[in-house]
Length: 588
Ligand SMILES: [Zn+2]
Image (cartoon, rainbow, N blue to C red):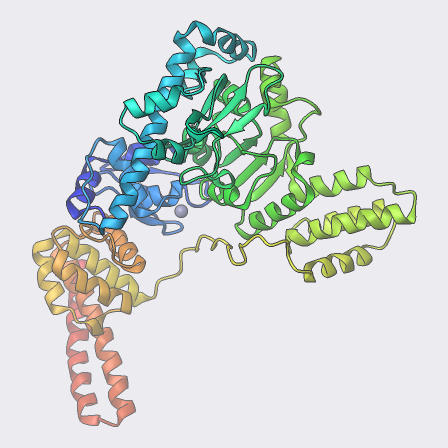
């Protein structure tokens, strides 16, 4: 897809309200010109996260997470830069423009836009049919009987697909979409005797959207008891991929990020019932087992996933795969012990939401859950039964990796099957050595949040001076001219080159520059209104950097045996040291 124009990026930045955006993830309080709060990127008790609403920047003095409004959305909502620009453009009503793009990519993007549109219009049509047609009476009664109110049904655009076999073929073409587009969107399919028919008929329809709220397909439930299958989803195609899709993610996304956990359920009506009850971090998988792709999407938003579904139906292999993906990404995967034959929607309807909340709160980590289920089911009175149980739990323990709690679980297993823990450990080691049930995520480990590294004295001085240059651009320009890369660290030298050209608006056009520079400049801008920038302090910092430069020069001259140069630099240093002492007396 072609890049957004520079003007578009600037206009979106201008329109975006960074305080509102960050507030979805942490509570902010005004502190003078800026806002502060607990850092949404690392665990902390006292606020070290700061937001500058004018320049649309954020910076954490604890973990040094920093960036602009786009970076924040990229990080917290798991979007690419382009998607972040697009999402913010949409949210703040900016019409985005793109640079001329290559014709093939442009055609593909336009086609996808058409498919989103035809699906979106169909969802609107089905929703109005549900509420307005006499023929949808039974559907309305069914939904009401499930305890779902009009508000949540309208929020999720739940609808009803009429019974006539070609209703979409006709309406779709009238609206200007080709049969080919209707097929690609999964709305119609070719019949055996020629002609196309509507994919969904006589069914309650649940629009499925991607994380950005674009329509990608439908889930549809039959109303008559004998209709097969009971649930029918869009066929996999250009937009809808079952393994990557989470129903309700567009509505749940910000709440998941805010609460730090996602609740995963099985059915569309479970999601509706929970959202209706204010449990808005609920999403549904499109099958019985959570997939690595779904886990990756959730891990971009939160640190914990609670599975509130029939874990037995998920199958052992799928669970082990999920555990491995979760461990690799630092994601905590827990299982809620759902009562048998009861789903969240039924619990909500029976007025037992409190019990549901308790079950979720009492969720235990996935390996412990699987190990205990295996042991509970096994016949531990026979050698063969104990052997089978050990064979079942060893791969689960292996998939955990070396984490706190594994040894404890190994002891629990040893105790139950009445053997020595070292024997269980040995079996786990063997299971580790076996080829993994491929999850395609060999090195998906998420880098831990870096703790703030101690800065060297020179780095502190260069940051202070560069930040002051931003604070006082008039004097700043002069210091930027006097500074040379020899005065600075490698990162500082890069920042110097950037600031010489962008001193008036240091963050404008930073997009597309490398991460190190983006982060460095952002930090400087954030620090620039904290540093007391008066000319005396600027000169002092400059002299301290100059002193350091001379010292490096003197050692280099000595190493090279250039005594003449060494002596000259030493005289310069002595002179400078006097001036520094004088300046320090003045500023002290
Ligand atoms: Zn932080």
